[in-house]
Image: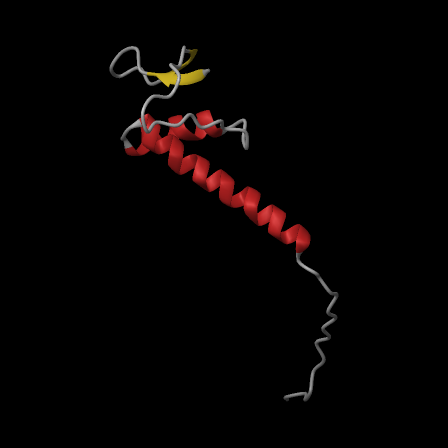
Length: 93
């Protein structure tokens, strides 16, 4: 799995392949599939605002999921065509 790793202070994050242990107890392993840019957006969020990579990743992923849900919803809405005409009602001199 790829992860953003902080190898040295002041140098930003490096994207590296890491081994992830199987979930234990009440832990779950989440598979991110919605965006190829999640890692980039997470790194930008952490660098800009500070904070924990895991939390920032969840926030970024929830934003990505919102766009995916909106796209799916827009495809099932029964759209109808509405025509509007703008006509002047009076001429002011």
